[in-house]
Length: 304
Ligand code: GLN
Image (cartoon, rainbow, N blue to C red; front, top):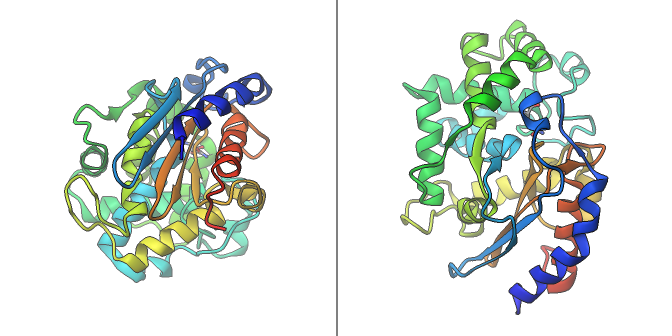
């Protein structure tokens, strides 16, 4: 398969659409990112990499980080996690408040913000320093000891994060946050502010294509069954209320972030990451989704 040629073609076809999306502006520090960026990287399970455009330029991974904290939370709590978080698509925006009231403080899934706040709470409970632990976890996945937090983005989100603060207090009122609300929000905005590029992400997701083993270290992070289930959750919940459309068009488990990144997995084959900051109405990268649709169409490879 000539992955490089396919990526080159996709860049040509998708570039004109980068201007159609809308850069997230509810976190002011993200609004400053130029909308015309486009990068894409593929890393095969054999470790070969291919990339195009701005694939080496770092960006704010935002909700893609929720996959990493889900993995950590499963390591700490195993199936007991599912007493505090559901596993169904929400069909609602990622920062919706209403469902949490109807469902008595149990977030629908780990990838909507309410669910990810519970994951952050679990990580806080089990680690002496949650921010350092998440950083260590991610650095081991992408072999980048310089991977770090963007403190401006974290501060900006904390200053403008009234919805997430509302969700956290709401969770606390139902007894579903065990730590101090401010500590949970602080851990959450920092994990969202993680800065990585497409090449880093295509590498960091490799354990999800390798049955739960980090191929760089040989360390098992999850059982094969937990890995299958994490991929299933990405397919059904990873891009929020666009999960049906994404499965229909792309056909891969994937996780998006409002920084414009999407990372996706073809178990046993490769991981792919794309970045284009302009978002569609559901808060997923518009050109990024298109690029992934073209990738599975041109390669003829998807989980379906
Ligand atoms: N930090 C963002 C928020 O909480 C993450 C949302 C996202 O990337 N979808 O709103």
